[in-house]
Image (tube, rainbow, N blue to C red):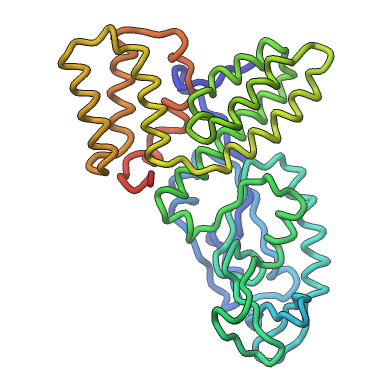
Amino acid sequence: MAHYSWSNEVYPQLRLAVSDCLRGTECRYNGGHAQEDFINRSLQSYAVFFPFCPEAPVLGVPRETIRLVNVDGNIRVRGTRTETDVTDSLQTYIDKVIPHLLKQDLDGVIVKSRSPTCGLERIKQYRPTGEWFGSQDKMGQGLFTHRLLEKVPSLAVEDEGRLQDAWLRETFILRVYTQARWRMFLQSEPSVTQFQAFHRDHKYLLLSKSEVIYREMGKLVADATAQNLPEQLKAYAQKLHAALACRTTTGVMINVLDHIYGYFKKLLSEEERQLYIETREEFRQKIIPLIAVIKLLQQFLKHYGSEYLSTQVILDPYPADLALRSKTTAYR
């Protein structure tokens, strides 16, 4: 099995479905695009992209703008000018493209925000009269994204607007990289021993998400045998998705950092111990970013050594040049 850990600087290639307009394709209603730098520059070298557009193949470019209309609880898609109902034609296409995308072994999906088809959240649902009264009316997901998450609730999905938030961006990228490692792990036809190693190497990453779920996952690993391994892997995958969907808070991350620090505490000089305490507290107070604490712990690891910590994914879960831990706002 290929062993993915921070120590060997090998990262799996991500497989991401992306709204085509975010890739720079001129497929929006007005013939324009919504090119996104994080996708096309930062992630370009690390991912295979699978572009999709639920609207252009059906309605053409340019096209009349559309909106969601709530008709007695039934969501329809209508033109904003002609009120032409295009729900059925869009849904037929969506039901064809989603299975195609899911065959690509996706690690995650990035959709266009505020889109009536691709939007992830807070998409306005108008009344049949064309009116919308704010908090009095429901808001939901776009037609495509809603159907996608109905099919695969565990899939990591974000929109490019939310990815401007450092906390949500770090959560999403950590999630898709872990999913990619899991995907490649399964492709290697792992043994029980390798299953145990995967769980061990992700211990502190999982603890940074949910200690409760981590303990449940540990029981699945402990009970795994050559005979029941397929069932245990399937159950573990469900727990893994649930854990990765959790967002790490500053307090939980500090608890994990302290556990890692505990491996060196008795070996450190008084000056080194004080430096760690000061650095950790500055992270807590959002004076410095997480990467500063991680680099200090990595320095301890390099100097004092620890076979167990040397393969802990949390220390280097994705390429450093993504710089996701370099912002003080990456944790709350």
